[in-house]
Image (cartoon, rainbow, N blue to C red):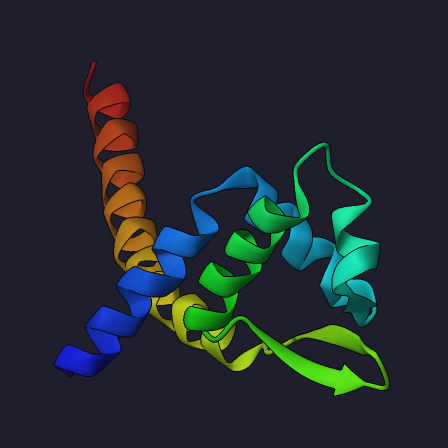
Length: 111
């Protein structure tokens, strides 16, 4: 349980940065080399490498060597875990909002 919470913290922390979210969006469409990723941003190669390291630590991407290039591929398992976590709260809030809606309708009918 503690490991799962720590992993979720790492996943959500890595997703808190817009550059990393954009990288994930690009890699979700197709595997890309680090060079292909880096060229899309006005950041140094070192900065992109740091972003990729954060995503890799969160297990959101995997790097694999293809010839001379390092390819980056999406690893959706960590996203599935985060989605499952968020879905729990979605159900709670839907229930609460439905209750609020019923209450407000009753209140309007009583006035």
